[in-house]
Length: 310
Image (tube, rainbow, N blue to C red; front, side):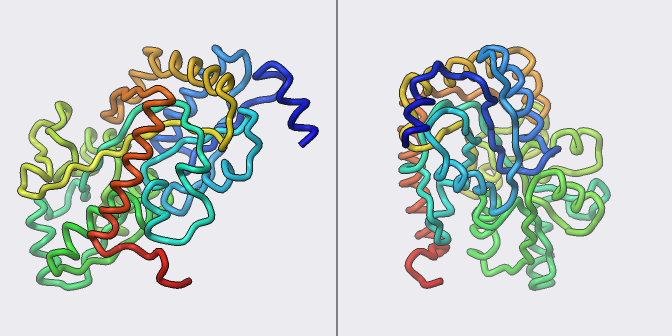
């Protein structure tokens, strides 16, 4: 406590780098864009922002780090959508509202259903027909249990009495390689898939967005195909519980300048993403609202595991 008091009296940031924890593997779209954002923010903070990766558990591995970190501003993390859902699907020791100080919302990803460029599957109906004719043989990869793609798959397949083999991966890059190489038949992932769709290695069957992407105007949305599903996954940055307002402001201001830098805007555009800015108060309100919605959605789909034993 004494050491923290001494550090708290010093100007922020001073003397050491800020660690930005990214809960996805190195080399994926989120990692690449977060590293650029960190580099740009470093210039405004006059202190290095260093990205550290902690993949696994559906994008929630940074949460224990935040929970245990001092609220001094030197430990922050990307906050993806799954952290708002996982507490309702499995037992965890952290709470995404209690243990996080919201800093800024940055952007969001949408998702798509992907197959090999040479695959015989050309529509979602093709997937449903195969699953119906070959129960339990259709292998579908996502970026983890309890992630948005997994939840949507449950609604698309299980709710219709169709079985599939769920193959979770730690991140986008390894999942896309698995689909491209034929290790799995289908992948559901975020728009980090964009370059591989553009070069023809993967085929995009549908997206989860509210409207068609200008980048792939011929690809329908789930909503157009008759499924009442729009699944976006906004993300931002958060710090540990109790982060002082002055430090929140310093971090927010630096990352806001960084995210509006043309270099960052152009980088996320490669993955069909746009800026989706919210400040600390608005982002905090959004997190609370989404947390409540996730609870309802998980219970409605029968995925809740809270209180069901170890």
